[in-house]
Length: 267
Image (cartoon, rainbow, N blue to C red; front, side, top):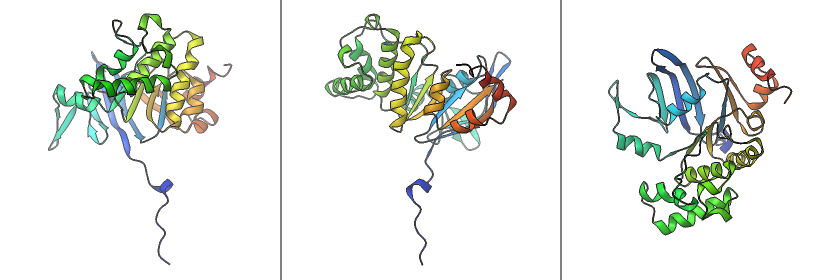
């Protein structure tokens, strides 16, 4: 009897992010001490940890907003910010780095919207001027994205006329407008009032449910428990524990993880 072909579930998904022994120094202070992490297509990986653990630095390295000082960091199979010449890593040009960043969306703690542009103009800025999308097409896609994040009626508003939660949802729409294959979130709810956190997390859950590859730095344990394929705890610039959400929250292996989670036990 001939062998059966593998089912789709058995075919491994492509690797989007591959970090191997990633190290980063700031003025002699070793902030990342050899981080190893793989993120596959369609995965949601949530990184948690105390302030100063290195999680924000690591996610900024993925987008080459911080340059690594050792190890290797690949995005879609290519070194981010560098190219390989023989055995030597050579820094890429700013233009080449900009091309790589087109495939990576990033949402920060602060919204960083252009105050002098309305919501639609904020969203179409990069697609029109970086990707060369015709303006009419970009505007149409911007309206569709605003509907997706629940802001269809805010297209003509300016950032100052929006709440913090609304501005962050615009920032997510702006990142999505570039049609990235990978979305990075650096504590996207930390600057929000508590009542606004839920509306941003709802958009992120929708992205996760629809197969967006995401690396999320957050203190929102509920989101990590519900939306993450894997949860990673960083401490002292290293990954201390990594596992599925069920494993991480239900049966943590490391004492450091148990101590970290105990702080949220009453929440």
